[in-house]
Image 1: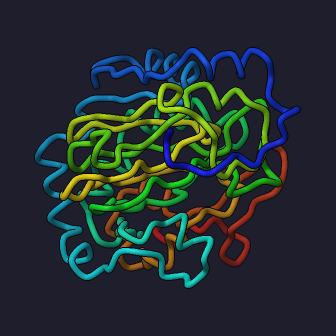
Image 2 (image 1 turned 180 degrees about the vertical axis):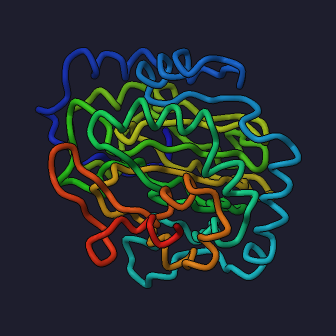
Length: 304
C-alpha cells in the first residue's frame, strides 16, 4: 500500500468511466524529445502526465545545477512556514526553494523558456486566458528517509477558479538527477485528471493503481493541474533532485511572487518573453479591461 493518507473528495463527483480507468491504468508513457506536441498532448490528455526524454541537455542541466549549488548548500530541508499542514506537505527531509530565475540564467534559457513546455502551455491554457505566466519555478530535492507526500491536485491552489472543462495550470517536473521508485520519483494516479473538481489531500490506492515517474536525468514529466500526484518516499541514501516549473492563467495570482525575486534591473537583461512570464507585463483580457498596470499602461512599457 502506498504511504499516503485518504482522499477528501466528494465521492458522488467521481464519474463511472473515470473510476474504471483508475482500476486499469498504472503506467505513464515515455516519449522522445523529437515527438510532436500533438503526440505529447495525446498522452497528457489520456493519462494526466507524460514523460519526455532529453528535455534538458547534459550541458543545460549541469549549468542549472551549478547555478543553484550555493542555494542548495545553504538551504535546510523542511518547511519554513512553521505550520503543521505545510510541514507535512513539504516534507522534513526535502529541500525546497524558489526564485530560480533570479539565481540561474540557465534556468531562464532552458526551463522557463523551454519550447515544448511553452507549446503545451499554449495548447492547454490559452483557451481560458489570453496569456499565462510563471506560477512557480521550484527546487524539490527529496532527501534520504523522506516519507511520501500526500497526493494532491495543483489546480486546488485556486479552488474558486477551477474549470471542469479545461486547465488553469500546467506543470513540468524536470529530473536534475535520475528518478527511481526507490529515491522518490513522483507518484501519479493516471486518469484522475478526468474526475470532477474536488479538494484532494491523499488517495487510498494500492501500489498497482499508481504510476511512478521513473526517468533519467534530463527528462521531464509534463502533467495536468488536475491529476493526483505527489513526491514518492526516498528509501535510498541519495537525494532525488527535481525542479518543478508551472504556468498559470494570466488572470490568476501565482504561487510565487516572481517580480520580488527578479527585480526591474535583472528583468531588463532577460528576453521579452521571459519578462512576460515573470510578471513584468500586463494582462489584457478578451473584450475586457487590463490588469497589473503601471500608471494605466502595460508594465512591459517599462523596458521600451
